[in-house]
Length: 309
Ligand code: FAD
Image (cartoon, rainbow, N blue to C red; front, side):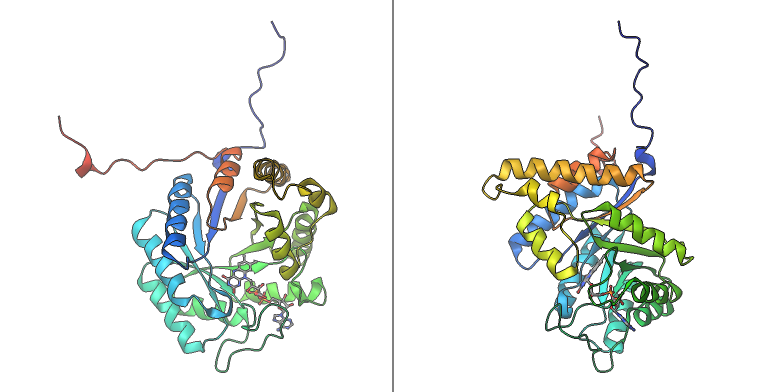
């Protein structure tokens, strides 16, 4: 017999304290729509605090984003959040979209400036008659109705920011305008996140900073995303995936192991909220959530479907 104390599990991991949210993008085809809904159906029973739907670069998915968000509001029990940008629309047009969201039951907006229609790296210019900054967009959503508003934050600073001070000034303006949560750009080295949170707290604001986690379904694609959004890819991470381009099975295991390492380290450092960039796929995100201790809660069978004996 062992005289070891029984292991009660990791006291840092109390699933009741962990909350997650999932980000999807609006589908472009019927097939993509089917995979999106399969992912939503698989992940929804994990009871996320919300699921969000992105707004296409250059404002290109207005209708599809709206349709997806409205369907989530109509057909699922999860709270939808609609991303909205300042790009390619006048203030009146953006306000009309915000009012439509309130009408269909959406109560949470992820307010963003967006990237220039010419693409990341091009100089950003406000659309004629449009919102000039995210802070203005946040203020407008709050003025129109009592929305919860989340905004973006950048642990490695936004690529356009000259320094962290400028970056944090912009975050400050968004918070002052009414944002109540910041969701970060994805990062692979948690040290960036910890330093960033310290910087934000040193500025005296206590808004929740929720880490955005990108499970690495496809390493090459993740590296490409990183280049456009200013996320650094550590050498040790590249080493882990090196030579695995044609070895899907090992790549998936390595990706799952890395994701587990990343979120466990965050939990051990006190993080309890996570935002997952799902890329409209459930498998890896579902597995990470299970590792975090979350279990699916199945909806009770509606009364009318219960057969009487
Ligand atoms: P802001 O925080 O308003 O500004 C970003 C940076 O721009 C600042 O840090 C600063 O460098 C510079 N800047 C802005 N205003 C000023 C100023 N007055 N003076 C000096 N510098 C200034 N994009 C989409 O198109 N659709 C989406 O659905 C979408 N979802 C996202 C979700 C998350 C969680 C994140 C992190 C990003 C998302 N993005 C999305 C990308 C985002 O639109 C881009 O990163 C964009 O370049 C900046 O948007 P922002 O709201 O973060 O901008």
